[in-house]
Amino acid sequence: MTHTIMPVVIVTGASRGLGAAVARWLAKARAAVTLISRSENRLKDVAMEIRSLGGKPLVFTADVSNPDACRNAVEVTLDRFGRIDALVNNAGIIQPISSIARADPDNWRYNIEVNLLGPFYMIQAAISSLRSQNGRIVNVSSGAANRVLENVSAYCAAKAALNHFTRVLAEEEPELTAVTVRPGVVDTDMQATIRNEGLNAMPDQQLAYYRQLKALGELEPAEIPGRSIAWLALHAPTEFSGQFFDYDDPRIAKPALKAFGKKLVTLRIVE
Ligand SMILES: NC(=O)c1ccc[n+]([C@@H]2O[C@H](COP(=O)([O-])OP(=O)(O)OC[C@H]3O[C@@H](n4cnc5c(N)ncnc54)[C@H](OP(=O)(O)O)[C@@H]3O)[C@@H](O)[C@H]2O)c1
Image 1 (tube, protein in one colour):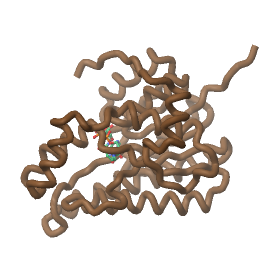
Image 2: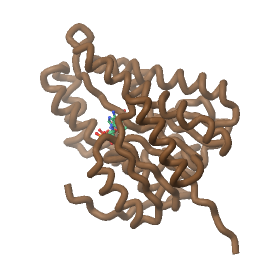
Image 3: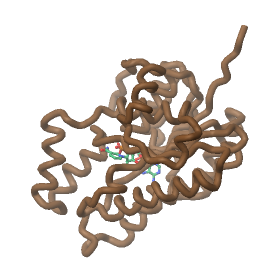
């Protein structure tokens, strides 16, 4: 009889949206998943789903802008599961939605702390464990890394920096496979925040674009980019290291569909 080893993956921002979708696909692949976010109750709901899908969840409530909390999350994962095969840095915030001239400096700084320093803290804490597994790091980026989007300057700057940081990481750590991925425009709370908070901060045309995507049903469901990200965490080949991928790049989307299947049946979470 052969025993397959359960892969161990840390997913930040796993309480909802894209991160929860990534965790569900990983559970379908029978992974052990450490679920991190600031909302304990929501994480517990996702953990129930992970269990029912065949995964092993570990809930860790933390703000990724806190380096001590990131170190603790890694320690607790190692205590519980013994190793770390992959890290998905998905936790992110869009705010402040404001022009550079008017943005609140504290909010601007917190955006960078969550979107850029969070991944740095998590990677630094997990790097020696990841090295010993020839592990993978998936940093969830955005089209905003390359595109000029007005009124979300901190977000654009953080994601652009995350892409370049990942290129440097890939050079420094040849034992690891580190990539960034753009998940498309996804139907999550982040998009709801843009539609709601953009009202007083964005030009009409910009806001109308995001509202229309929702109204026309053209936002991507989180499960689709989530499947690509879960596949990258478990299977990204070493030659991908340092690169920035679109979630629907056929080199990822095709094998992800083959490996995980089309449907992800989940329990309904009562909000
Ligand atoms: N939605 C899109 O269209 C889109 C497009 C491009 C890129 N992305 C990227 O995709 C990723 C996931 O976003 P989403 O769309 O799923 O947004 P979301 O629904 O708002 O989810 C964000 C997740 O990050 C967590 N989070 C936020 N701040 C955190 C912090 N300081 N510490 C720990 N966890 C934190 C949230 O949980 P708590 O609030 O419980 O902490 C939540 O689980 C982000 O990196 C985002 O930039 C999204």
